[in-house]
Image 1 (cartoon, rainbow, N blue to C red):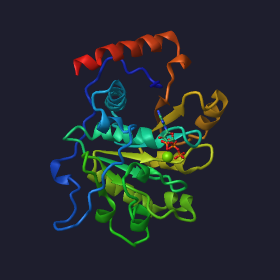
Image 2: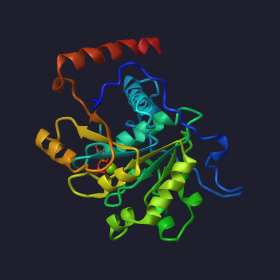
Image 3: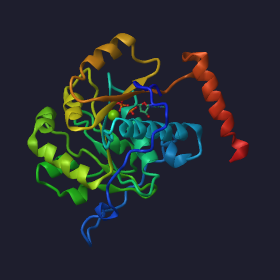
Length: 271
Ligand SMILES: Nc1ncnc2c1ncn2[C@@H]1O[C@H](COP(=O)(O)OP(=O)(O)OP(=O)(O)O)[C@@H](O)[C@H]1O
Ligand SMILES: [Mg+2]
């Protein structure tokens, strides 16, 4: 992971001020089928909580919390975006959210706001029938749309039916109200957004959120595209950059050695 700003000095974690009574359990008697996560080996905080890569997602979480505390600007609603498709936005959103949800006192929601290619359900065993677009269009209520998972305390809000004009929904006051509602109910909301080079959505979303994390898939996207994509962010803050899917031959010796250290610390024999 590469961070825009120096976060040395290890400030205390950001205050997350929500009380247990805001737990999104839904109204008494509400029936919500638990949705299991797909057994993807890439969902590391669930399949291998002690792996060094899981530790990287926890470190990402700590960086975000520390930066928020240092700047007195807690990052409670975070947009995940990238230049283009398939850079790992959804996977990074998922694993960051799962790492955050390990904390029993932290209520975390992962919301699929990629209305062009909603994909969060790829990490579920079955495709949800409804999502927040159905709530938005009065076909369902929010309680029914929020999914509980069996293997994690994370809550998920799929997009549901893909609408004809996504940007109109994202720009609407009604959508902003929905985000405010979610902000009140959860300590952290991760918004899995579309890529910046193709759609305006992520930039609009960043004006409602506390900041944006920019995902780059190592070896896939050129510097030129990355630079161009970053110019598309004209609102809100950029929290940092995640370099996803790093092959060690691609990075310099410093990072290689650093990772070697991490690897030896978590040697299999020590588990
Ligand atoms: N670090 C990684 N290691 C292995 N596979 C990965 C990694 N990151 C992403 N992938 C795989 O690449 C594909 C694209 O990832 P993902 O769906 O997270 O990207 P995305 O940026 O959300 O794409 P889209 O713009 O289409 O929504 C998925 O099959 C995912 O499992
Ligand atoms: Mg995606």
